[in-house]
Image: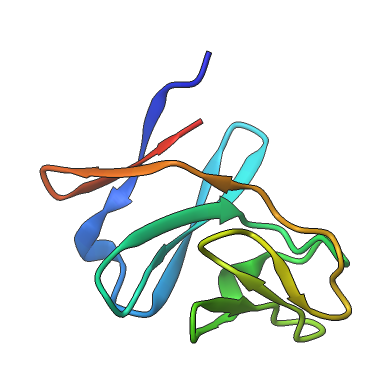
Length: 103
């Protein structure tokens, strides 16, 4: 059964940035869009299993720091090679200045 898990405070992430969140054996990234919306997706690149937390956030996507693959952070879609496997996105809610992921 999925539960809402606190990932971070809203103030932990600047606009158009991301933060890594580990929960158990899973790694996520939480993204704050330029429109001040929050998103969450798997935090490991599907191409070579590199942490995305060091990647660049721009134009609705995260660029992997190793081989420049990109993923749409709203849908998890792999949008640039060498990645061709999409990442899972996770429901997010914001309450009282905290970001929660439904895991």
